[in-house]
Length: 133
Image (tube, rainbow, N blue to C red; front, side, top):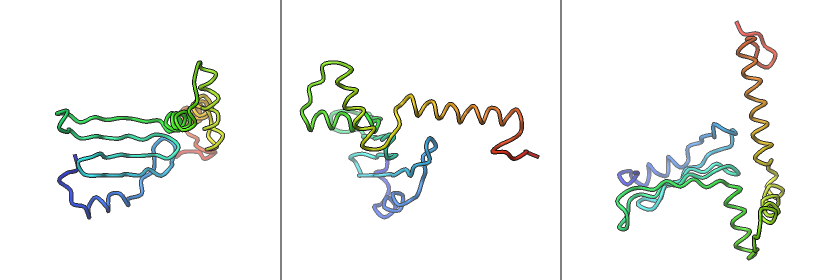
């Protein structure tokens, strides 16, 4: 995908400041020619594109959720045996606490409230207390 770009252009692209549409967190780009290209939003998600290689004639895109990745990492590093959902939730909750993150339900609820405010603003013409002209 980026194999035709020079190393200097790749370095400049990686320096660009971009912010995630979902949470406003800085987004980072990493390109390693002929190996992978990834976009990462810290504490949210990583998207990795693996180009075709000797074993496959197509590219492959993988999305990794930050909480899922960190949960898996703790389970592997500490050799924790997960027997049921409750065991998994204990590790999941550790990740949320360590990185000071809200649970999925809490984040979705917060976003839902934000969207409700926006929907009401569309009807009333008011955003954050200001009357639209």
